[in-house]
Length: 399
Image 1: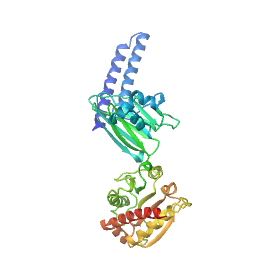
Image 2: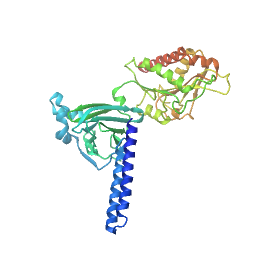
Image 3: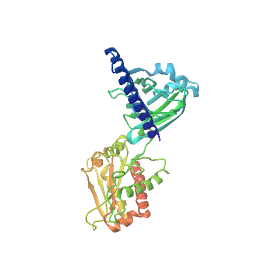
Image 4: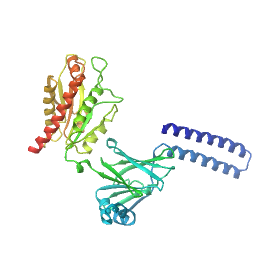
């Protein structure tokens, strides 16, 4: 709906502008050079107005400007510390909250209503939506990024010393606006309204969780993967079904934090998938796939690994692959095809953490397909993955 409203509004503005241009041209057609200059200025102003509307209304606009650096304690003394520490009645506690890690503070407009936060960790974006009773426009100087003793406002620091590498804003209809931050690292965000400020605390996942796993359902969206021998089943859907069943079980286990590359029929890029695993410093990265061949006779399970990952460590990609391959063969009662180094597979090759790409079975084989296509087969694979994840942690704790 927002896009339709935006298009309508910009179109109306464009029509109004064209009308103005025609009238201006007609009126000044026989005027002096000075009058012609005035006409040019009018046209320029009209075009700039349309450009502003096109940028502001419903479209992301990158916020820039001069970079302002100040001392966090000075900043806290002036406007933040008393407010943030108010709930404890302690200005010093407010300062501690600001300097503890990474913080973004947005100075809210007077007409701000509800503020909500959404995060897409895969793309490293944080979206803050502000509801208002009228359209607003925040300036870069209203947004502070704080790391320890230094606070930065205004434009993004191009040297990489900023928390973010991009800030953009979308002004929607008259009742909402959105600020979008793209962070330099994979950070988990928690937002809270404190008086007329919105305070976003950012933490690395490994600062919050001792056990981290990334699970990927291969393919998806524009890339359906292999088509099964029945001509109806697609690999991407099978991969996702197994992942969702695993997610149901993992959601019941608070000891392990699991990040998923997708939980719907979408297509994250290969780099987004492996970068997530590397960026959150996962203990293991499991990618769920199915195999296929021109020969309908080939069947069985296999697991791919990174031969160069963690070769000096007691637990690495190869060991993870061995454990999962053994679990698969017994779970689905398929042939054990073994584990293989896969330097040609991008997400395997680029993984800096223990990685295993699981080929559950062959969709081109009728017997294999019947197993993995069934709800029972998918549940069995999900349970095997769940058990192996927990067993890896038991193994690491006992070493």
